[in-house]
Image 1 (cartoon, rainbow, N blue to C red):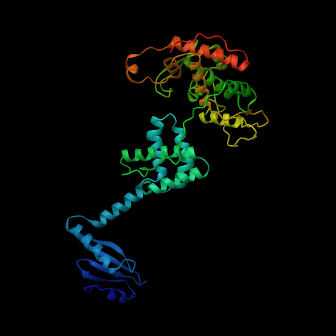
Image 2 (image 1 turned 180 degrees about the horizontal axis):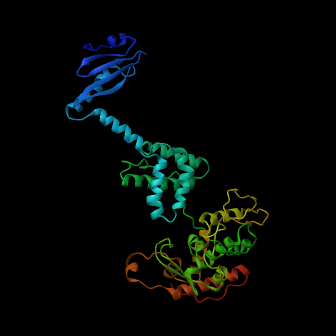
Length: 417
């Protein structure tokens, strides 16, 4: 092996031979020439009694000047007791083992969302539809802020601006989870804003709309269980998700007790059942609003979908989007409810607003709705308001009956605020 000082001209003039050969400048800085003509820069060194060859790149893509810089850096690490080739091999292996976005989604769902979120299926659906198809095979560490922005823009452009906001929230939580578990060093969501200004819903149905919904549900294109569930939301003013998951074991006499593990705020909640509520619930054992698949309650998304599918905006004559679920009925021959759009949660808000209009104070309505007390009241006020909740729901039942039958509102003694 000849030892000489490399120059660019000399390297260019090195010709391939029948067998590979090398030229060295000394101290391990070497170039290898293959019979094919490929020229590769090497740093040859020893770790103990073991000979090591570190590839510094191929000439002319890696110039002599660049190769010499790489060599000098590697040689300094060897002098300081570090094996640069081992470091490189470890980095390659770490890269190979680095989780993809699909891996990260699976770990986030299993170890965080499914453990801490009742709505974890919403996260699962969002990732399956809007994240994994675009990022799934990419390494999570490679996702940058620009990738997040483009992902959100794609969702907005397909006509789902609110879904884009929701996707950002879920993706941000997933990357924060990765940072907390030391899977990633940084989150690519830092500084990313919601692509759409979100307006909070405050829809309250008028008396005329209440009657139209109640009576229109009888001929709407949805299952009987769905119709009863929607009416029960309006009668009890409870959250849609808590109503559709109702189980007969939670009912005792005139009271329905929503267990803490099912309540959105994690607090056990007692709901007074009026005669109308008990009629809607019926005598069924097990899940009151059971999915057609059996053994479980209806899917939460099916409720909102059924409402959207049953609506027809005035003078527009729209049809359903055709997506459907196992808990809905595909029968567009049934009459649709012609009115401005509303959601299942609007029924709860409508009931609460009407109780307020009947004179019941905020603390009673909050007790009916199972809103968490705040501040000093949360510490000192342990009153359950069962009697007041009963009065409020009975008064609302009387008013509701008059609304849906077109009669005059029954007299109710209002409570002072």
